[in-house]
Length: 230
Ligand SMILES: Nc1ncnc2c1ncn2[C@@H]1O[C@H](COP(=O)(O)OP(=O)(O)O)[C@@H](O)[C@H]1O
Ligand SMILES: [Mg+2]
Image (cartoon, rainbow, N blue to C red):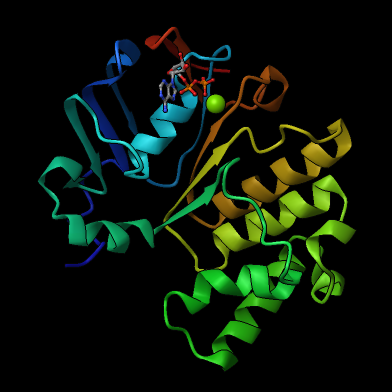
């Protein structure tokens, strides 16, 4: 099984996707596509279904109706055993996936490569290069608690990008950051995207995409209410 497809498929495609939790519908009949190399936003008020949408892409949840395909792979057709393979191509910046506080910055980022079985020499080179890209090379030996919120979030982003995923999913990535730090984090995403990675950012904060010229998917109470360009 290879990640590469015939090149004609969108990176992400939802077709009539519905997701229910107990007796509540979190997403209702959602259809949209994300093209390869796009940087796109998902927005909407709290509870509108943004996090659920990202979890579906990451296979952390399964749709109750409809189909989802990633680079042409229809997720409903996949064997459970293929899921870890597909996940390796997706970098995530999720709120419930924070840094390990008993490991330093280097080890937190290296983790993503170790689970892929990379050698020590490659790990060293890639981790330092990635930390340099987010201006944290000098903090490699520091433990997360000694870093500011913005620095910690840049480490989370390093961990998400170090293995060069095809897609990055970020859930409220600037959530607790001051405006300047948030701007730095957004700049990092733009740079990753400029190198060809598809980036999908869920945020309730309109400032992040105002006048960005990017496509925005708007959710409200589980419905896709608009799809437009800012
Ligand atoms: N694990 C869950 N169990 C039950 N309900 C959930 C669960 N996760 C989300 N929901 C509900 O689904 C809806 C969408 O939630 P969510 O996707 O987290 O929205 P957002 O990220 O836009 O705030 C909300 O009404 C929320 O309460
Ligand atoms: Mg959310």
